[in-house]
Length: 204
Image 1 (tube, rainbow, N blue to C red):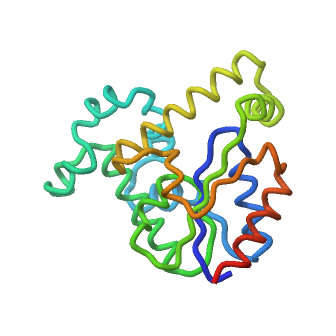
Image 2: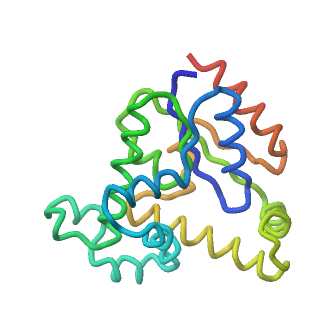
């Protein structure tokens, strides 16, 4: 595999696990939390600051007002004039570009598909699943009670969608942004890895 693979995923769909297994299958690096760690080192911000950035995006309008500007306005001002969240996004973007420049890898989340949109060697994948599957998985993986799991699935989806919208101006679940979208509940985690690998192996 000579491509950089980005994975955007619904919470509870198993997208992170699928991405890790896909990276292992190809013997290429896998990046998720490493993006935060590296961005924190380069900026001096605490890792918790990066982790909270996406969580705050529960309401798109209030989020945009709180941040002070959106990605389009940010293009016309200097770095010093950006909000904290915009600085965090730019720091993560720099790290993602560096990882992609170093060679084939799998990058999960953080608008990587958008950040690398001008690169020819990037394949963007989207992993989703039914609400029941995602709730059940969050109960099993995160050890949450059912009522909390259902609430968290909705909250995470909303925050990720708003975070993506704020920084890219596009819909997080717009399948036109991806080369392939796959339902992990229909294939299972390992089955999804097999399907994605078969698809990637056939790409020219």
